[in-house]
Length: 194
Image (cartoon, rainbow, N blue to C red):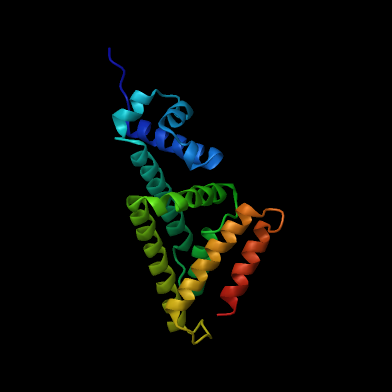
């Protein structure tokens, strides 16, 4: 009797293996051979589900973004304005092991995206979605009278996103200088000044 294979489950396992390799060893080390070994499969199995390494990497990035969106939707359910903005921004900081892995994965793709228009397009689309959400929450907060700043909300959105990216990168690069509590404190200070 032939073995029944759950193809979607196997595909998820390969993408999880790809994420682990990227986070642990870096994106350059994420070869199809390394990913297959991490997943416990042969290269032939990977070829059955993905056309090439770039498709695996792109799928791993998209899967990570989808998990983040789902988690964030749960966190902001029932809140709006500044409360939702705080949740959204804090969720994008590496404040625990899961989000640290997500941040390492994301940052690993940045340099590769500079050389790959396909990856750059995915990064830009995801960044635009996040920017739109931040801008919408700022507008909600202003309408609710929660903001005292008269600053242009597009500028504030860019400042907030740059702060999140910068703090995240600094924590990954300089863990002896910054702690997770510092990131949270610095971000919330900025939001509170609004």
